[in-house]
Length: 92
Ligand SMILES: [Ca+2]
Ligand SMILES: [Ca+2]
Image (cartoon, rainbow, N blue to C red):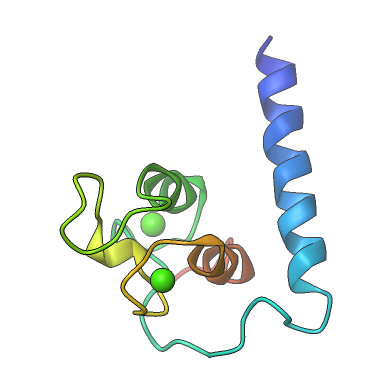
């Protein structure tokens, strides 16, 4: 069961990386906001999980997490998660 979850996470990362690799079609605006959402000094799955928990939310929404809105467009979307994936593993 644990291996299935790990496989799903890896496949999701591969999918996101593939989407990002298509010439940046998803990311049309660069952001200067930190992708280290929990401010622990590294961009990792904890940050992806925080963004995923806020996915689809917007300012005022019950699941809204301002720190997860990386591109600061007022929504937590795939664009924000792609920004985090691009920085994945980065030590800040
Ligand atoms: Ca972090
Ligand atoms: Ca956003």
